[in-house]
Length: 221
Length: 209
Image (cartoon, rainbow over all chains, first blue to last red; front, side, top):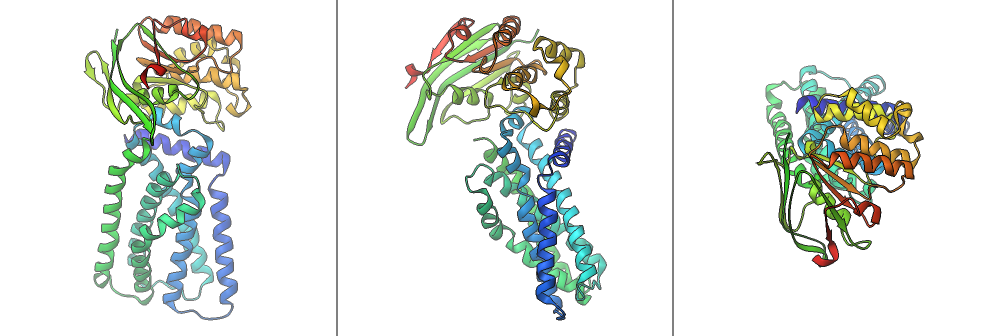
């Protein structure tokens, strides 16, 4: 299954490079959102709590603007039936998840670099904790976004439905990641952040299990 | 030679309160061409999608057997070829790229000799490296036959098999079907007299309301 999913992922990458379906929208969103935040802050020195919150707000909304494309683009192009005819649901979900994982990490690395360059308060004092938070936070974000994208792809008002459905599902993850990012800023030790880390890791575990269990029913009309 | 058979048991489908068809029972095996006919909106495409396993019935079941062994839902896609006007291939890729990608995702070897032969039969060989977006609707329909036959499926499902095709394209399709139906199951959903002429038996969906 891994090879087949990887082939589907390569197809999506190739398709994305030719159509620029998600990348352009995502990069523009990141630039606009961070510019607006920078303009509104001006010369103010903002608290680490607010910096962490704004960081994850940008991550959340950029995920909202780009990650649904994995399934929505198939539905809009009319190729969903073709996919159903060439692969099992597990292969399709794994391939799409892999694509969203890579896309999430790619855009969030860019967001992190921009934040590090332009936000004074974005100073990481516990890098290992930040790295673990970043990795598990992004994995959770990609899994939830992928399964929600598969649900909303068949709906009429996809654009509105995606953030509405994603918000309650992603809220526990985002809130915990904001808290962990604050810990990274104030240099809290890894041991003291274990409780929050356990929440993020459990969230990822639950979402991946639920997604694989449900996708078969979502995918088959 | 593999023997494919299909058992349709008490198949019923409705969308909300609207009954599409009910209690269809039928058994077919290799070397059969079955026709599905009915008025517009009678459920021909729905029936085909259910057989292909991409749509669930409300009642009943379909059992696919290969050499007497049941094919599981996860493996079904590798045994089915599907052609229909609403099937759309990736327009940003060339015909050949599409097929190579499909082979990889299916996990099967890209049989270049066989696929070249199919391209030739469908009169697409010289345009195989062109982006599908540049194809006419008739050429796209021809390409769907290459897509449907590339993995040598035991069951070929053809929904409106000759739509968008010119007379030369129709002749190519009939020649391929004539050959293919000797060892496989072919199900044709159509109202075209010429298409249904190939069928040994025909299910009229109006009789299952």
